[in-house]
Image 1: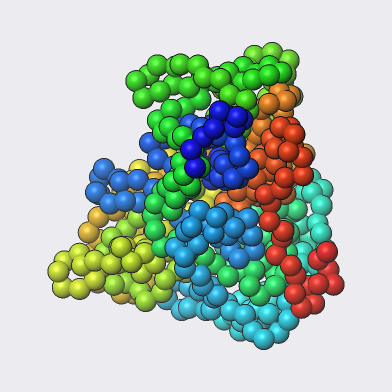
Image 2: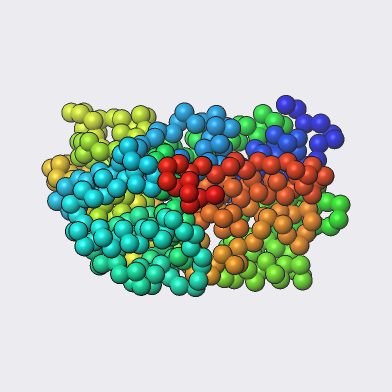
Length: 476
């Protein structure tokens, strides 16, 4: 659809999920979008690129979604890539030594649908299961407020055993929120539990079958098809807004910073990148004060290529060690199926360590040695496999830390500048730092911008997944 002179113009700073969601929604609503992205590719922290040391296209970190992520699912449908998500209805837990336990749904109504699997977990004792059940009841059936208490303190107050914390709460919540339990708010932890229990379909896990940037290039194509423009390697340097327009200065590929004028601006940037582009003056003070409360938490992805198959599992939660998740990329992504030594298909796996503070100062070789040692504990076939190549990707600023009290400082999309709006998973989305939260923020910013332009009542957010079974009595 070619642009027309009467279309209002919108600049979007940031080509991650928040910016792309806003760009697609506003393109649909008749705005002429220009998106500026600092990196040479789209996707932000959910991106992929050709790694120079391995020659392989790697994701900067494995990203997954769940059926309960209604806005992310809608976004994928919107840009035409929903068929590139592979869905799983069970979760595998592996102990050192290789014993596998499976969590899956039963015919029981929510929230009891996973109870039979849970009760048969051999890695939890009867005492552990009773303690976990006592905690699950209030977390699932009642909305928990942020009282300033950490989730670790909440668990201690609710009689959780050491083993229950290490083998249940730790792998589930640190993976979901990328933060240590003593730095997670009770409200954030409770939301993860409650949303996953509201209906059996809620916990179905989706894994992309393409490298992440290939997935999100479709969003770029969607914006272009609606007359929009995309500029990579073009970070926002500054902006100035008045009552009638927004002047944006962006550094282009040649290092020049020309100024362009737009009707509106969406700042879809991480909080630590946003601060440097805010204008000086009183209007910026409240937002700067909010940003000052935020901290980042790191995620490390470890990519290993073996000369033979090391497992027939597509994914697994790993217990009791540093590594938390294994994703078998050569099984999950058809393009990865290959022979490393000519004798048969190899295994390419990505290992994920969320809240990976202990790995930040370690060298690549140290991390690979640690990962290889742990992989051989969980997957006996890896002991006879040769490591062909490897790499480590540290996303130091992966997510904001969902600490107690932080929700009070998450800003809405509306700023002190009437033509400037905020998006990003760290803003007030009602969700933690997830792909779903990022997409919600983009849609919320688009709604606020549409309202400001006079198109009041234009809505892009999808409704939450409805509860089923007994959960309908507790979720409104």
